[in-house]
Length: 160
Image (cartoon, rainbow, N blue to C red; front, side):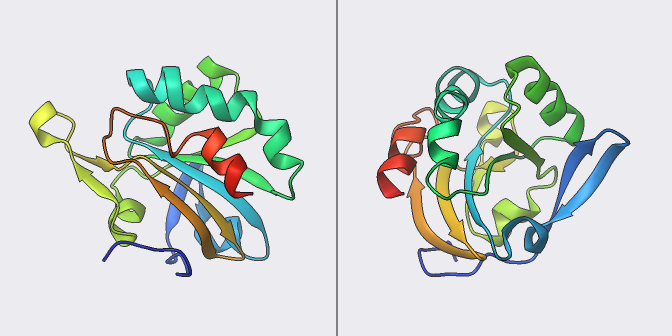
């Protein structure tokens, strides 16, 4: 079942990189009592994700945060080391990079993407959502993984 507006996000664990190395961050820690913009990409460093999707959130991070958002996070079915390298390569210091290495979160919300035909295995669909206290209040899912239009920063700003 695909998550929808009004649903509560399931409890899961993401991997994040800290100064002390890889660590876990639970969805309840991320979302409880807070407003979070979460966007997902099929893969770190992939062309649409790296050149089109992430840059809009980097460029508009201050504006998004000024609208009562506590945190902006990007999630991808990549390991924590790849996500950390992507964060460093892009200088996106106002965005939290969450690794969903086994696609547990993507599967739990019904937004997994089978990209096996392209040699990528199970990934996440491209989407962006606004989450308030763990509940989805806006959800923009891309029809095509190679597009970053409704799930981009402009779409989220319009929803805020």
